[in-house]
Length: 365
Image 1 (cartoon, helix red, strand yellow):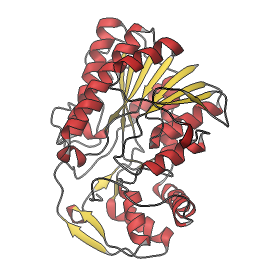
Image 2 (cartoon, rainbow, N blue to C red):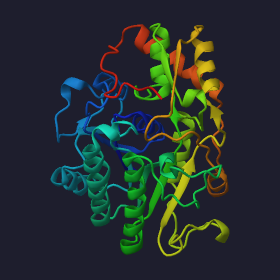
Image 3 (spheres, rainbow, N blue to C red):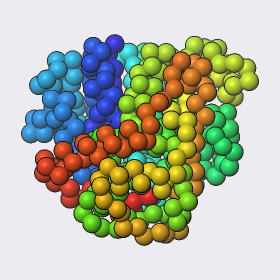
């Protein structure tokens, strides 16, 4: 297939591009390479895919030096004219939209960035898919949409009307926008509610990266809600396996869910939502203990109250994923943290790229 991956210099996008190339798909990746976190890490990911920094030009496709099936273009989703031209040139079979302004806490600092990228940018993607016969749009939502929900585990059929950050609200908006396009224009769409993704090449504003960096440098880590937090930590390889299976299975017009699991409207539109998580909730302190064990160093901890925009617990119900795709993420926190720490030591402690300016927000968790 010919697949467009937006946000291809990002954490999940980078790993997805590599997986799609391995199986022989033709892939075009786009990314605006913004400076929300260290652009050197983004350029490092691109280089792993054969895209050299010094050859990147805005709006011009660059072919990979290591795989002829991959082309990359620096492009912003809000640039409708260039985006239209891209779709008309390549006639994509599938679009995977992973580009977004990420981060819960940064949405308290610069909310307009979320409207521009996550709302206006996503609308442009929907319009391009609508007018260019795209067979399937897969897009990143987030476990953040569950907001103040207290019933655990979180299920796709739960109401998600209580977001606690603009980031979460923007992701819920994406789901609503996608449903309207599925209903009105027959565009097959699948939203993926990712649960705390981690692993090698991960984002520097996420807990695992920030904790690892602070511990190796002998600085204290900031542990929010006094350590009384749980997350459904999901390893990147498990996420990518789920995404690839979903790419290959657009929902039919009437859906394939059992009646007791049908989302409102799913039988009138080719629209579906999946949780992708490990299906297990792990305490933050257990997660930190695994980092300490792999670094062979005890963290200096500063215990702080819960931060604005945060939730105390997340836990994914993945029964629908299992039933529909015969798949359930399986990589343990022990294995995943060990893999990340090995990568971090090789990539950062060997001074392959600088660790300056890692994120615009200084809070870790």
